[in-house]
Image (cartoon, rainbow, N blue to C red):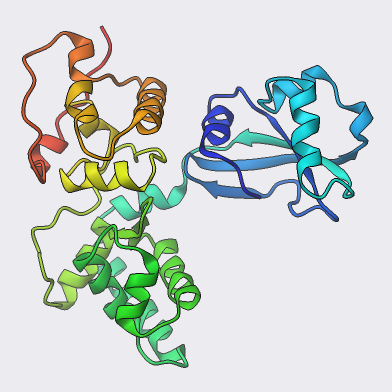
Length: 293
């Protein structure tokens, strides 16, 4: 079930609690928890409803500007299919976020290594787990088709393999491509794999960035800004000046920071702006986030 970033943010804020879809048959079940960019979204109800029964209140609950807009949206694609009303609620953070930020102890690493070995033995195309982790470490924020080509794999199969690694908290998805998590880096270091850049920042504890679009994500990541707390160390002008950061990204950054109780440094009236430099230090990234006065 696809949802736009703005819809997901509104679900997390409690402003949207239903969605309407035209399906031949229901594609989700009550109790299903979908992993999304904002965390877990749970399906609380699934009901087939006549279009004529929809009301202005339904439109507001679904985030539509009007009942007419809701009906027009439903009629745009497959107008012959029945309409389903899906109840939704925000069910908390994606548990994989905490998992990938937790550096495993020796026993956990042994269990992860054994699991990776099993995946390699079961693969009809040969071992792939360490090569994939090392490639993601070498080329973060790189398109999946480009990574797949480097490994001689087709893109769908490559993405499926990366999802397996992500389930164990070893990688993290970005707007473009992936990055190695602290957990994944610990496994590679434990096995002594020669990493191309051992000092490269990996996933830091904190609040993940919202969906910003590829260009903005790449621009911020190039300066080591990968968590909302790091954005709060900058002024809005510094972020706005980055090539690739446009109105869409600024709007979603502002909404995400408001939801997290964070603010740009100049919003707080603090010290003069600092220059944004590539690869902000990990020490800086771990400063306590500012709070609103």
